[in-house]
Image (cartoon, rainbow, N blue to C red; front, side):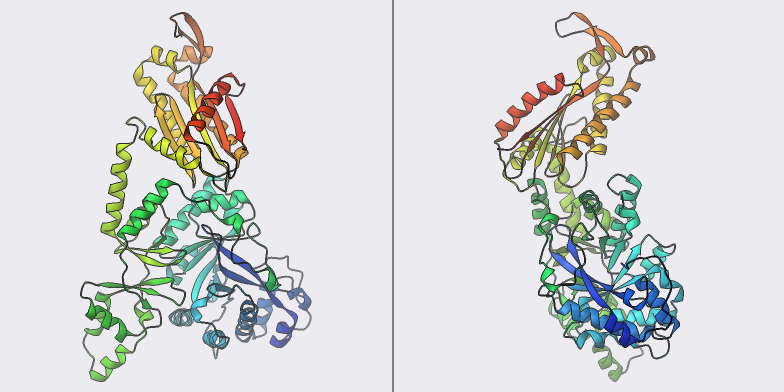
Length: 592
C-alpha cells in the first residue's frame, strides 16, 4: 500500500540516495490474522518524504528513476526498512512487507538483483520478506524483469500483488506473477458491508487466490462493519486503521489485537474441524532451500510418498513437489555422470508447484469449492495459523463432505432443508454458555398463516414457508450465523456475535421482503383489498390481514449465561410481545 497524496511538484534539485536516507524513515503497520488477532507481519511505509519536497512516495520514486538512482535507492530503502523492523521486540516469526517500485528491474548492473544480500546481512532470511508489486508499474516490465523476479522468488522472497482491482491487466499479472499474497484495493472495501457487488467481487477474488495457493489481505479496513464483511468474504489477513495505525515507536508493537479475535466457534464448526484433523495426511516436508539429493532420499525411504509439501523457515507452505516431475527431469536423457551429480545439487525451489491452500477452520463446503476450481490438483494444503498442518487428499475431502451431508439429512426439515429441532437445541445449548461476545436468539412466527392455508390450500402454504426459508438464508448470513426450521410456520436464527442494532435492522429487512413477496401468492381481489375473509380458530368468520411475520429477539450480554430452558421461556414471552407490537419486533437484552 503506497500512501497517496496530491502532486504539488518536485524539488528544484534532485536529492541523492544518502540524502534521502537521512531525511526519511519507515513506519510499520501491522497485518493481522482475521481469526486469532495475532500479528502476521508488518508493512513498511515511507515517512517524512515531505522534507525533500515530495508530496508522495510515488513522486519520490518517479524522481529517482528520472535521475537514474532508482536501482541504487531501493536496496538502500529496504535496508532502512529492515533496520526499523529488526528493532521490534515482536518481529520474530513475522514477515516484513516492502513496496518495491521495480521499474526497469534487471537493466544494466541493477543492485536490486542482489536484494538477498541486503536481507541476509541483517540476519534475516529472504523468506521473511515479501516484496509488494503494483500493476501500475507493469508497463516497464520486460523478459529481463521476469527473469529477475523468478530468481528473487527462487532465493526465497515472497511476493504480494498490491492494490488488486485497481488496474486493467491484473488478472494476467496474478497469473504471470503467481503471488503469495493478494492485497485487495481499498475501493472494493469501502462500503463492502452494504454493497453486495463489492462483497461478491472480494469473495470471488478470495476464492481465486486460494485456488492458486495465495493468501488474501484486506487492506485499508477502517470500520468494524468492513472488517466483518471482509472476514465473511474469505479474506485471510487484515490491515488498516481499524486494526492499528502505522507507528514509529517500537514500544507500540503488539503480539496480537484482542478486538480482531473471532469468538470461539460453535459445536458444529468444532465437529467439522475434528473431521478435517482426522483425515489430514501428515506428509513429510522439505525446506524451501533444501537439495535435490535429500528429497530423492525421502522418496526412496518411503515408496508410498508421491508428493512432498515445501515449507519455509516459518513453517509456512510454499507449494508441492511431485515425484513425477523429478523423474521427468532426472530421466529425460542427455546427462552424463557429471551432469547427473550437478542435477542433484539443484535447489528444490526450481520444482515447486503451487497448490490450493486453506486454513483448518475453513468451512468444508468452501474447501470443496477451492478444490473443484483447481485443475489437476491432488488435494489441499491445510494450515493452522498459517503454519503447515497437513495435506487433505481429494478422497478425504469427499469423505468429510459425505459424512456431513448424512448428518444434516438426519436432522433436517424435509420441506425447507434447514436444520431442524435437534440442531436448534444444540445451538441454543452451546450459545447460551458464558462467552466474551454477545449472542442473539431470534424466533420467527407467521401472522395469519392458518386463514391463508385454509383459503389457498396446503400447497400454497408450503410455498409461503419455502419462500420465507429462502429469504431467511439471503438476509441472515455470515460467520457465526445459524438458521433453523422449528416446524410449520416457525423459524429460528442465532448469532454467535454481532451488534444488536445491526441484526435488528436485518430482521426488519427480512420481514419487509417477506411481506412484499408473499403478496403475489394471493389473488388480485385479495391483494387489492389487503385482507381475506376466513374462519378463526373458533369457527367464526373474520377479516384477516395478508401474511406477515412477528419476530422476537433476545440478546445475551457478554459473559452472561442462561440454561436452555430459560432461553426458551424468555423467547416464549417475547413471542407474545412481538405479536402485540406495532412493528412486529420485540427485543430484549439479558445483562445478568
